[in-house]
Amino acid sequence: MGWMGLLLRKGRLEKDWSQEGLCKGICAVSYLSKIEQGKVEPSPEIMKLLFVRLGLAWQGEDAARQTAEWIERAYDALFSMEEDAWEELWRQMGDGRESMCCGPGMIDFLLLESWEKKAQDPFLQECQEWMSPRQRALWLMEQGRCQEALSLQGDGWFHFIAGRDCYQKGDYVQARALLGKGFALAAEECRPRLMLECKLFLGNCCSDTGRYADMLSHYRGARRLAQALRDENAMRDIRYNVASTDLFFGRAEEALNYFENISAPTAMDLHKRAVCLEKLGRRDQAREALDQARQASAFFPSREIADDMCQLVRYRLEHPEYLKDAAYGEMLLRLFETLRRELPMGYVLFHLPWVEEWYVANRQYRQAWQLMRDFPEYRR
Image 1 (cartoon, rainbow, N blue to C red):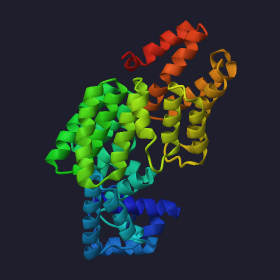
Image 2: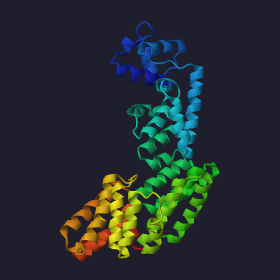
Image 3: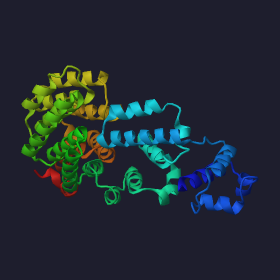
Image 4: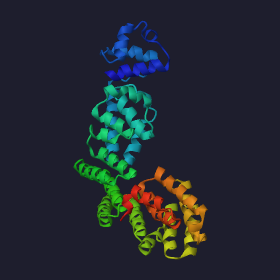
């Protein structure tokens, strides 16, 4: 019953009340102190009076049961990565947040709400002592403390989140191990969408590290799952990633075949089309693609970063002597640092050839050498 004491203390402090002010006429101050510390299990009658005085909604048995059912459905949707089910549950909740926070499901609800809002409720710090292993694992995961979370909860979703985190940091060896384990667990748990996400990121890992055959193998598996789930966005991501990898490996014609045949290209699709055309020497068509990119949607990355990436290509097209131009070097290195700071490693690796080209052309050999040390994946 520790959640009751936590909730009473939180409500009391928010109102800046003393313990004596809250419990006067209801119970002794020493008894309230023990309730707040979780040392006694108070009677429902006393708790109801304290809740009413604080203006908190007292959750009866029926409401508590409904909250518990909602929480388990929410956990299942989260761990299965079923976004539609997750969003529908939050719509169903409506204005019931206060009730959710005034019952035994309080900690679970606050943890799930923190994941939904991408911002952790500071009050959860005080709840650690009463957290179950699942609750604490999610709390740790929300803070990016993935390995600690995995020591408490070994489900497929926790492995996937930890693997995705390693992938985004460029730790591909650990990412592949975690994602592979996550996929196997997701299969045991019968969570097909989680299986799909694991396969997609395994393919991404192989793409970034030059394991082309392995990349195709993982993406074939992801494609089968995406088809079964009728996930057109995943299918598009797979095609985009394969074409981008082809482009990186110098297969500009193969990549262009994809990027020229997209019905509604995004800014990044058009950026890649322009790079293909640049490499094939079709400069006017490349500029046309960049012109279109200005008007196209930029779902990811941000509009500003997408524009900077396109502007860099345009600069090369319009300045044949760009390697002698300090303005180009400044633009390139500024974008490169932004990509390192804000985006997954794949975007960084894609731009590495131009950074290396700049360093070598300007006899900055120490910087070029350091680049190879920082990005061993680039040595393919």
